[in-house]
Amino acid sequence: MSGLAVLLPALVLTAATTFGAGVTTFQDQTFSDADWTGIPYWNQGGTAILSASQVSESGPNTFRQVTHDYGVGTVIFLHLSNIATYDPSTQGAIAKVDFSYDLKAIAGFPDCGLATAYSLLLEQGGRYFVFAPYDGYPADLIYGCDITWKGFTHTDAVAAHFVEVTTTEAVWTSHPDFSAGGSVITFGFVTSNTISPGTLPRLTLITGIDNWAVSATQEEVVTWTITSSAGPGGGVSPAGPVTVNSGADQTFTITADPGYHVADVLVDGGSVGPVATYTFVGVTADHTISATFTANSSCPSLKDLRAHVVAYGASGAITKPGLVKSLLAKLDAAQASVDRGDAGAFRGQLSAFINEVQAQSGKGINAKPANILIAEAEAVLRGCLP
Ligand SMILES: [Ca+2]
Image (tube, rainbow, N blue to C red; front, side, top):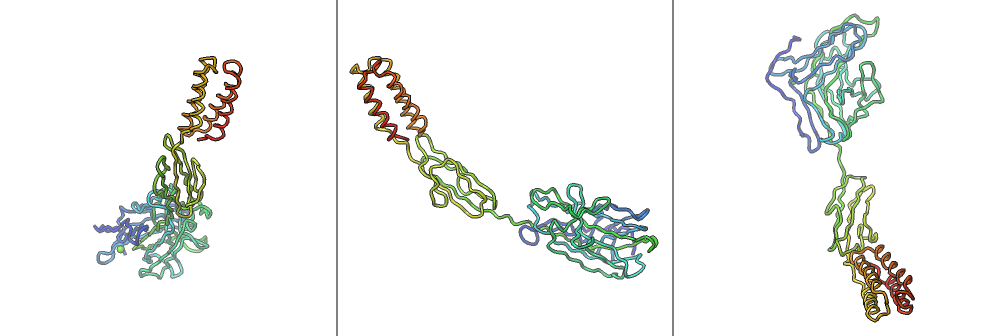
């Protein structure tokens, strides 16, 4: 078998959702050299020479031929696809990775017991991770007597099955980030050999890989729907059906229109009172939230109180003309507070009215009408809240 690259026009390296929704598949059956980058990574084998290129068998078939020419020590050769990339932030968190390839020994093996190791490689953020779920790594061995194509398949690989390989060591506690927060992942494969001291001379082992395929299955995202609604006189925000990721929180704000106030808020049909906000915490089911609003009522007794002030001013019971104007201003302000549903301001303005009448009793206003106005105002305070 020649080690020279043979150029063929066919290129089959695709990124497609082929196994149903949520699965992204990369496969390469032709291994054009332009689609791959070879990275000699560990070179403990003296003056190791690691190379790989597309070669052809009889007919249209092509594959990638890998040559490890090395001495005592360990060599690791990374083969990174220039095309097979997956972005978790846009394509979704990865639940699992399935992969397969065909391997065979081609030349240079001194006996059937010597093997070249293969496994899946992925690069993320400039770091390299090798599928190594077992005691050692990588996953697969192609032995010297495996001279016909042999298939290897691995399924349900998760992030914890991938181990970071630095230029000096394997870091068993460091894994790639398959979550939606993970950076772009590029797939490939890794080849490696080791010669222990005193066992063998320098070797030139040639192997082949074909029909490389990787499938990334997107993690299922569970969502729930919270439906909000509002009666006349106000709104609930956000409005309508809101999609919430499972376990997340969602807050709603209830706002009355001018002249209205919140009458009640129902969550899943049960009252939570006239609240201004409501938060669903750790959502794990569908929910509803609805609000009703009531127009602010006018306050008849406040109008009566105002009429009495006007009458006392006309009769001379309030002797200071400016006092009538001051008292009416406080009552008008209180009415405005009722109209916009502001109970706190209403109480403050009516209390200011009472304080002013008390202060002027026997001075700007006769004592008896002063006591009547105070009693009326206190009744309004008790019975005329917005
Ligand atoms: Ca092929």
